Each structure stands twice: as structure tokens, then as C-alpha cells.
Length: 67
Image 1: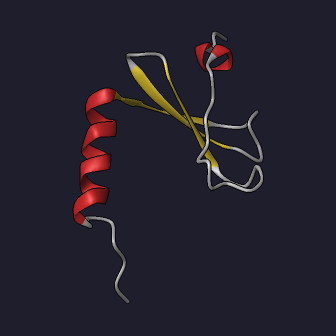
Image 2: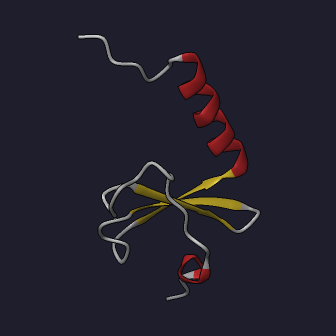
């Protein structure tokens, strides 16, 4: 199985004190997200358009939870 995300440069927030944070990488075409504490498990892959839509939704509060 070809796993192109294995060769990417993964990054996490500078505010992450340990590996318990999400990590992100890009190959120019896709954006990849993985669990920093379990990097060899599932990786999510998004197109640039999907990632930008998610970022815009976060910025305007589309995902805010109000109980």
C-alpha cells in the first residue's frame, strides 16, 4: 500500500507541550491530519478546498458547541 504521507514534514502547534496534539502536513495538493501521540495510526486527508472551508468555518464559529 502506497502511503505518501509517511514522507511528509509534520508540524504541531508551538503551544503543544507534549505529543498530545494534532499534527498537520501538506504535499501541496492535500492537507493531512494525524494524532501526534499515535502517529502510525489513521491519517485524515483533505483537499485544499476542504481544508480552507474547515478553517473558514472555524473562524466564524460554525463548530462552536453551545449546550
